[in-house]
Image 1 (cartoon, one colour):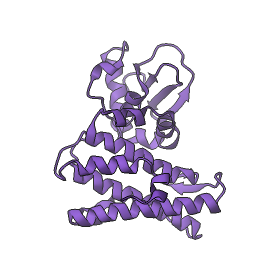
Image 2 (cartoon, rainbow, N blue to C red):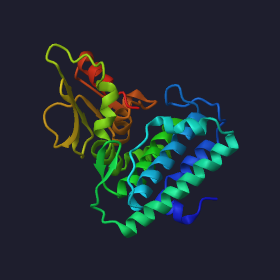
Image 3 (cartoon, rainbow, N blue to C red):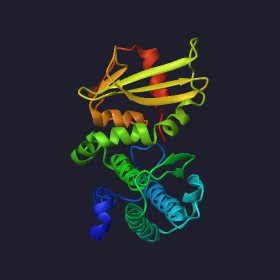
Image 4 (spheres, rainbow, N blue to C red):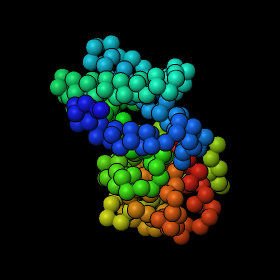
Length: 256
């Protein structure tokens, strides 16, 4: 049973837990090369690191964010040990997020993965991870689509994690003779998401709709595209940009 204080901070935890419990550890997922157990290892590492960095800041001794090598100890655990570690680290994250909300101004700047973020990001990012990786387990069920459709999911993906999200796709990208790739992802009734890549780096931003879109889709599909994923039903997205432009934009949006 998930304590109410944890559910209040991480409301997406229970749906994720139920999705994991409904599958075998070695079942495949929509995330390339990851089984259900791999997803759980990743989520345990996320919860631990988010709590570790935020707690260290609260204690007055900030630490740098570790890379995904932080997951190695969890891979060596038995399934029961891993499950206990995951729930424990989620509970710790909820506790330290509550302490930060009480003790820190929401405008406080904290270093996370090489950039400055604010205290609310730590719980919010775990919520985003729970939604995205639950989709990796379930695909396009109603719970997943409703959660991905939430406007804050688009904003978080663009504003909070957008630039590092582009780095994998930008590396080795064929930018063509112009040396630049630009894409505009549109969801009716919302700002466009504009992504670019050139010799100086990658950018991602929200902008008012203008001109032609590279891809038009519902909000949930757009979040999946930003994270290098695709809905099971490809008719949920549309494009008149042509295969060369579309190929490059999709290569840029290869996600994690």
